[in-house]
Length: 267
Image (cartoon, helix red, strand yellow):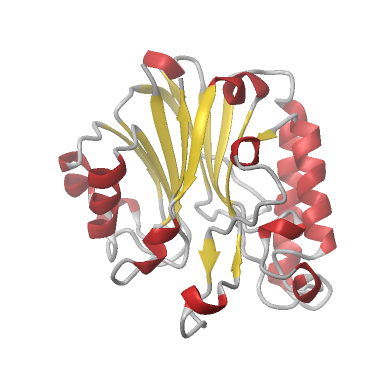
């Protein structure tokens, strides 16, 4: 028996519930984690989600902004919503599976702040907030580093490596790839003994992107992407993983998100 986990910044779940259905029909994830749902809990399209075959649903939303949701065919027994960086933004869900191949595994679904446009915390409160969030993630990772059975997925809003962006040189001063962000992300990875599951199967120097800006007139021509969406896990989980997929084609679907799904298969 195997399990397929998908993560996707959907950029409004109500607007793109049809694309969620398309993903499920074509790729059949057993667990689907969404970010930037932009939907309060009482407005979430739960009926549509359950029609897709997901009996177990956890949501953490707010009106118009942020929001995360986890759908599963496997039962989970706990759901936690943690507060990060002194804000009540809906940016985190934790679920622990009760049965099946992931029994006892805790899945963390994150939407890390984007950080605005100016990479200077002194003049940009959004970037300061992002760096505080990253520091707290590192402290949290340190606390859970000795435990196995951990998976962290989501839009982490950082492209950590030169081969995770279309141009390392041109993006060094652009939020999502600045040294303070990439070094902070690496510190978090080391502190939590996390393994980048995507790169375990698609190693560097392969270029790999999961986001292309809406500002680009034709994203397929210039291919100016960044890998902002991640699946990290403890070493025991990655050792059981059998493959990954970054669904680049989803960026070309009708009325798409600017992000594409990332999928991990676990034996």
